[in-house]
Length: 233
Image (tube, rainbow, N blue to C red; front, side, top):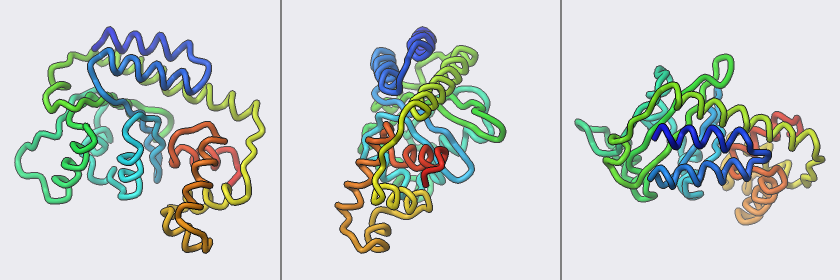
């Protein structure tokens, strides 16, 4: 695994846009034998994700606040070094956690390696590589220094390309897209927004999809965080 983390550091450090970073992550993930990757920036009340986890799982994870159930997220709060994990039951997990593990398994997420690190004052982020095999991650050897360098390089380069993109581009968001983003930033679901604005669920989904595309991001959480940072909502 250390070789692939070194490859990731090299590829990401040369990337000039977010798409190239995604491609580098995907390539290294697959070559290392994993199936999926996820970068999460853990902020006070939000999670910003860059991931190729199935979109349905990402939406469900955020809308149902699964971070409060996810033992990986709990563990990174007090952990400095990388660690492996598995959905294989140990002891007797409670009913909600068992349901969470079951849903993750449906989407091919059964084990993984997670690299936690500080991303700023009182802020943490994690880089995870996930496998659809329950025992795959436990057999991987990870040097903590190599892992930390890879994760920190990814974080820094993402910030760099996003800042360069937004400073050089006038983002043409329509009024309806901004309205839906504002509601989303306040924690409203798409159904809530549809009721509040007296429009259909599909119309809300359409506006939010266009907003993500115009902002050049892949997830709704990332879109609201970026729009807030830019001061447009």
